[in-house]
Length: 171
Image 1 (tube, one colour):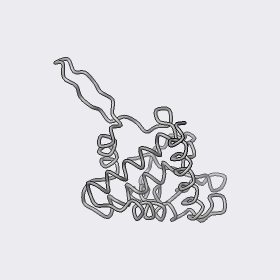
Image 2 (image 1 turned 90 degrees about the vertical axis):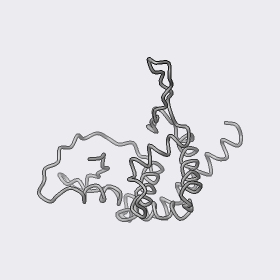
Image 3 (image 1 turned 60 degrees about the vertical axis):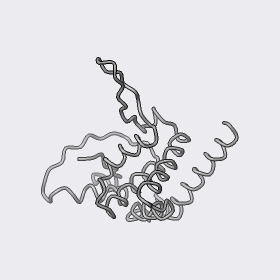
Image 4 (image 1 turned 45 degrees about the vertical axis):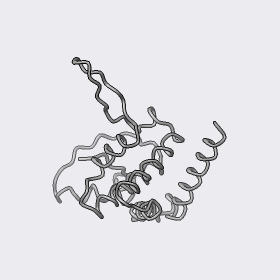
């Protein structure tokens, strides 16, 4: 089971917040109880877009599931923590992309490098992957409180462009 982003739709109704959440919920058999721990999610469309892209890639290929692919990409991009073993060796453990470990600017850089790794290793076009991720999120993105798919894509592009400008300026 995975973390699923839900949105309160009325007094006692929770529903998938986007297409990525819909995919996870569809895997649960009808009539099965699910234990949920309620906690507020940080709003991060960029992170949701990243995960939607990984799910789109994994659905289109037989290479790996989104979670395994995520771990592989963290290793490939050097997002690791070295751990010394008792025998004097060194192991590299994938690190976290959680906001307390990686701020938005660093996450955008990681996402760019991850998409580059997918392009180099698997021949994936980053623009096509990005569009497929945005489309997957768009399954329920059209509600007035969420904005349109175009709003999401524009927001992601603005955030990525701003981070690139900041990094280029040495900020």
